Amino acid sequence: MSPKLVELEIDDLAFDGKSVGRLDGKVVFCKGGLPGERVLAEITRSKPRYNQAVVREILRPSELRIPARCSHVNICGGCTWQDLAYEQQLIFKKDQVRQCLERIGKLEDVTVHDVVGSPDQFTYRNKMEFSFNAAEDSGFTLGLHERGRWDRVFDLEHCYLASDVVNDITHWLRRYVAEKGLSVYNVGAHTGYMRFVVFREGKNTGQVLVNVVTNYGEFPEPDALVGGLTEAFPQIVTIVHNQNGQKSNIATGEIERVLYGSGYVEERLEEFTFRIRANSFFQTNSRQAEQLYRIGFDMLELRGDEHVLDLYCGTGSIGILASARCGRVTGVELVPDAVAAARENAAINNITNAVFYEGDVKDLLNRLSGDDTESEVVIVDPPRAGLHPKALKRLLGLAPPRLLYISCNPATFARDAATLRQHGYQLPEVRPVDMFPHTMHIELVSMLYR
Ligand SMILES: C[S@@+](CC[C@H](N)C(=O)[O-])C[C@H]1O[C@@H](n2cnc3c(N)ncnc32)[C@H](O)[C@@H]1O
Image (cartoon, rainbow, N blue to C red):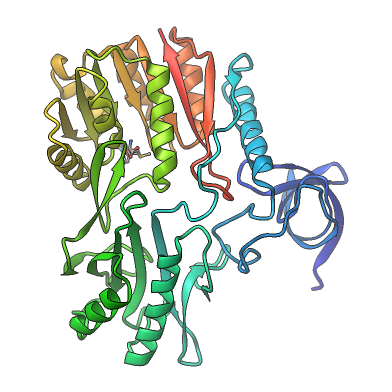
């Protein structure tokens, strides 16, 4: 069947980064295309209320369109908006926050400030994950997944979100694997050895961790890998090997062995040092994370003697930065490794006024003593799903006078903020912060008062 090609005027961008046009009055969500453009699009799916399409040709480009730096922009699943001027990305992100507040939360009167742009628009990522994939001709690719394709990996020339050294190490590894004749994983057949390479980088320290993730089995000739890498790249302070024999295509391992160095890199935020290991969570854009937290602390106007409850605290970065600005901190986090890292990070910074508990916020808030939960100031930084209804109920029970909500999903934020408002909280303003230039992801900070 020949593809159905249609001409469309693009007039908006949707929440997930797709562009929006109309065909006979019905909305069409398109991959590709920018507002103000006329495009030739192929309809890929027709639903009763909307169509889905892929833009095949730009017939009249938008004035907002700029040449993308990256040669992979048309196939890479990473960046959606490299061909949209950065200032325009921020304008669209602000508009999407406003739309979420209005449509989902009915919060029309909340001031949405301009989005705080990232200090670095490129090379901002401190974590990169590249996949190996065996090709049919016995060759292989090493790079990123093609957009929407779990089974296809293109050979990376250069990723501009990663630093030069990360790109250079990736090329070095590709040559090393080919020269040594190491077998490469085939996702469909679940055969082959080399699966991923993951980088963690201290952007403020210059340290690099290389994590080679393979199928089961000890790494062959580890000394050759370590010697070659460390000689070529003095920025590498540690190399680890993770083994993952599971079919699920994730770059974490079941067995980890440190091949060289300490197993972690150090990152600095303000005057504090954080240890980041192969699989620890850490905000991906270090320099913008500092800004994000500072904006939050400015909104909180801490006096210096408060007890701050840091819910969904991850590896403790907010709580540790807050510890210098308040009386004491209590953190709560679900993932045991993250809690261990938060405790370690507190210890290496000689912080004695912060404790971190492991557990689910919705359960732990019931079980902890009043001394741990009674707090004038609560910070929540939940995952994309937002606050679980039970967690929200417990929070309303605690009724903190000041609640700082950091969100990576304006839709769930709008839902939760509407509930909080129904229970007596005011939220005058929201400040979006761009942690991920060229992608559709939006982070925001908001202060709620009782
Ligand atoms: C967006 S991250 C925030 C991390 C941290 N605040 C930071 O800035 O680095 C959300 C964190 O919530 C944790 N989490 C997810 N569900 C949770 C739950 N039900 N209870 C406690 N923590 C949870 C995740 O493991 C993750 O570390």
